[in-house]
Length: 395
View 1 (tube, rainbow, N blue to C red):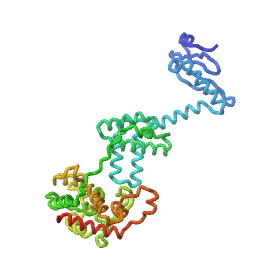
View 2 (cartoon, rainbow, N blue to C red):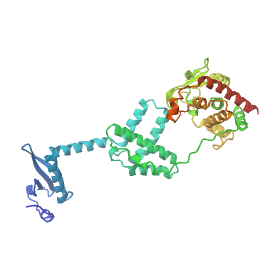
View 3 (cartoon, helix red, strand yellow):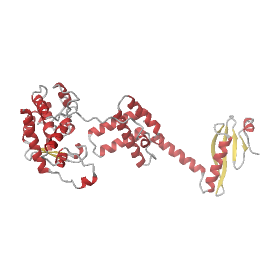
View 4 (tube, rainbow, N blue to C red):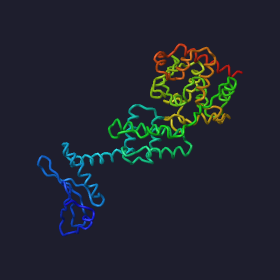
């Protein structure tokens, strides 16, 4: 006779365990300890098997029957509910090992093997630490969009909108790596694309007035700090490359006779090698610098260690000492000064200016037709720009 809750509650404990049947193979095992456990007895190819469902009342009579019915349907379809249960356990055990922290570490190692720049690796490590504080120990397959959003909101609440967006992107990269590796089914950050406050685009401050730029160059020549800092700022003004590329520059990248600085792909933002023509004033600065740091590997080593480049704050700090605020000029701003004034001159092909800056054309069709380096024009452009800077100083 089928069971009901009243009958189950009235079952008495005996010296030995005993069974009380429901129907269709489901029964309740009343143990001598007093606990009650649901079991389902079935046969496959004449062999009797037993599926342990779980304890009552944690699993109600209705739930036990539903599990029994699902198991019977699986058997009818040629499956074995016990094998399914063991596979589910295996997947759960495996998922416990695939925490976000561990998958994130594997993703970071993948970036290292791909030769990502030190700056990129450092940013990845920073973002992963932020995420790990919130859900690093959770199995990656159990992390949901709301969990990720709570983590991002903490960063956003401090007004760090750009960091929050970059963190979302980095977490998404880890999830996509997990999906590709077969240990996650989806990327929960995809649903959060419009959930965060969009940061206001703020261009780096730059001086684009020739007279004002000349005043800055005079101030740099009169800088009373480290000579290496003065030379670095002058080279940034002349060569218009990114500060990070200059800070990490090595002497073996420079061919003084050919007057070319060859920056390897791993140091470039777009991961493509870039050649920079060296006009006469730049060569003169390099000659001066060689007497200071030429015995080492780096052009601009840190004062603390010749194995490490100067700090990224050194150049901007020097500009502040000269009286230029962050709203007036930054080390990166020399690129905008060059780009603006070179384009305004009308003397140069805009593509040559873009290639000088190592910019990549975003329009795919246009990029296909703009593969050249414009090298000859860029050499002339570099000489012209160096001459212009001298004229600006003389005004």
